[in-house]
Length: 297
Image (cartoon, one colour):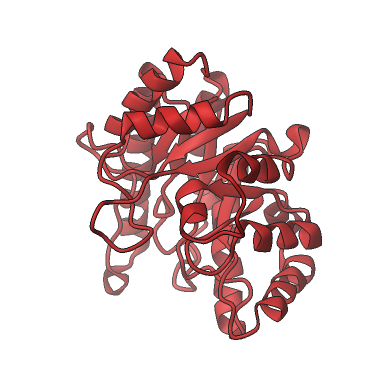
């Protein structure tokens, strides 16, 4: 089991998510920001290795406006040596890497322009992982999208876009996550049946909307969609409900007892856990200690 957190390290004095306004776009500005972002990413990865945090989600903002038509600069070639160096570090320390495009990535949208922009964003993020020369256990994670009044048709539309419009490199990395409102684990299982995509399981989303599956059974269903040689072991997102907040809102800090109980309930199941908890690495460090005490690391 590897445990990690997404995108931002709050202990360091840098961010890998610097960006700038579209109105101030220039190639010089782009090169400056990407150079800074990748230098910070190296520091974050080094921090994670030093602290036993071997799962990390890269920021979608590593290359600002990478999927926007304004960006015609060949950043892929310019930064290829840096990406390769980062990839070598990741592989040397056996880190697990993922990316999670923003909510505007909706493959089953009835709007063809939305689909086009979604694919461009997936191609960009896939290119990051490809430039790092990571294998297909490094994943791109998206949600099912909207239901648009007919979830069955929306699922079929997702599958059609997957098969007819996505490049093979993207398909090799793509996963679908159960969400907290529309796409349950069983809906994602239907998408898996139509496309072969593995399911990234989210425990909090499952608590918000489900078809009655107990937590351990739900994890087992998701884990069975992963082919170890191609996909690695199950990736999952872990969080807990913030008290007195809207349903599905992530907690500020981990409850070590709740995390202990989750690990006890899933004893014997292999998974890598991404903590979607607001204080990032602070909770991840606590989670590592809980998992270590249970012999799960």
